Length: 246
Image (cartoon, rainbow, N blue to C red; front, side):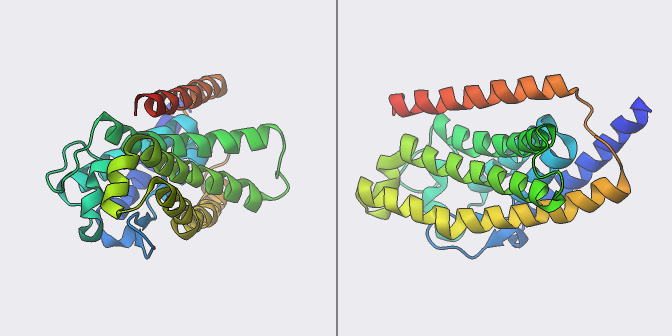
């Protein structure tokens, strides 16, 4: 039984990972958006992985999403956003601004935390019996708030770690930069989160109900809870340290 569960876990993870790769490396994953930050569908497979397979699997899917994003921004950045490649990779070969170790933080940490938070929120909601009578709210809110974690992680990272070069590229003051980033939350972040929430329910509810019943995670509940709390704490510390150093 345990072997069958592990096999199901690996197969499901591989399928979602393949979808993530398609979303990241093709135009299918891009959404029309205002401003230099491109709205994407890349967080949808990440939130689905977290809800279906737990926080650790979600975090791992987020790591792969970060890896794919790193490859894109290093070797084939979007033409309209090429001047901002330094935000996501320290190895950008174009533009006047150079990235740093904090580029890797922005590229990987928000995506990892998105998958982790999707699974963590879903688990907490179920454990506390919140929204148990409404599977839609249970899945939607888990995906919605998890997607916002990526949005705020990226945008706050830009302001904390790269506000000077980012503002210079946009030719804006710090105050206007802050307004621009907040506007991005409305024009890109919220639509992404809504789509992530809707897709999470559309995929996770029938999958859990008809394809397999019960938890497909191969990790214990205590392990996932401990890893989630530690990861959240370390992320907060990392951003605080980055804000101080920059």
